[in-house]
Image (cartoon, rainbow, N blue to C red; front, side, top):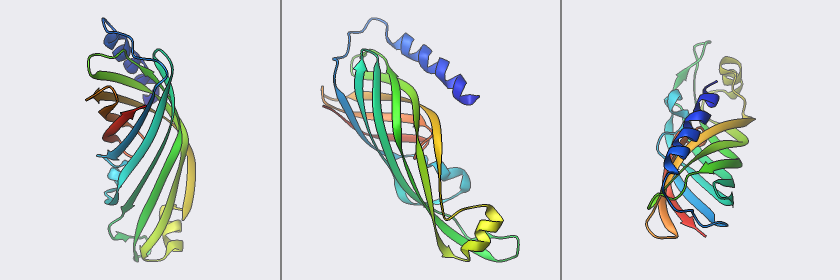
Length: 187
């Protein structure tokens, strides 16, 4: 339900942003490399061992739409957890995500461009035990050593251009991190 609330908000923001600005050039590719500022597993009180890293590329297919691909990787580690049988365990999660995304983009507003859209992909968690028994953790927490799932999620972002080719970007949405900032290169 929350995903369907995000879509009208993104659409309204893009329509508002489109007023009185020139058209962006067609047929360009934005390549973005970012670092997650709010890891996806923050709710689990995990310690970040490898900052969430993301890479995406978006090709403008029409005046206000782009199609792209994304990938991300992070490593988090739990604190010492007590299991139901009284034993303790600690594990690390190597999380990988990749997929495709479709974005609606505003017109260029000076150095700013606002965008939002939907992404669909696949995520993989690989659990490495630091302390304890994996079989007990599987039974107690319903965690598998390797698990994957399909996802469909939304995102909202903005790009600030320093030059016609280089800039900064920031995005909010579910993925490798709930908030990502980084560098963007337009090709």
